Image (cartoon, rainbow, N blue to C red; front, side, top):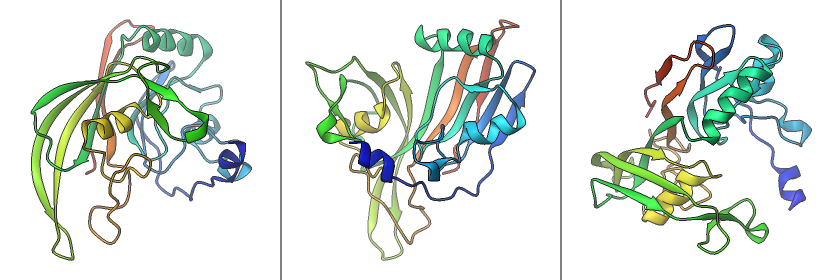
Length: 232
């Protein structure tokens, strides 16, 4: 398994991190797709959200992560005390996260819940797996925003569904594997069956964007309701 970790080299990410809000305690950022949250073990994977931000904000730490291909909202602590307070909110599920996604096919129901435990399986690395016996509880809600058909450049018609996803737990790859379990993987998801569309205006990226984040500011104790529109 270590060879898989060591041989993955992230392609260069030329997009900048957008700082949406900052005070002396925390940052709210918009992470670009194709950027690691944390630097990898491979020295070629030094570039990351944390590596970039710590140059500007020494001592900052990530409270949570987004997958390499996922874009959108992240909250970053500027010191250890704020990190501890925010991590506690995440662990106690006080933080609400909402994602925008494009799913392959037309989802039948307008809304629903995906309740399926997720487990790590070393034999399947880096994939996670659904496992009711050994998995950790995982629950996600989905809400259909629109169903449409995309006409590709070769005239092939591709049915897609735009959804809002709200994870109630925070397992690795949760939304990606839950959408696969629903029968409608996220477009551009190379790990869980999403279809890539090279050469079309739907760029070959993971069509998953963290679009809303709600948490309590650890110092002011005011609720922070951050929103960041999906780029797709």
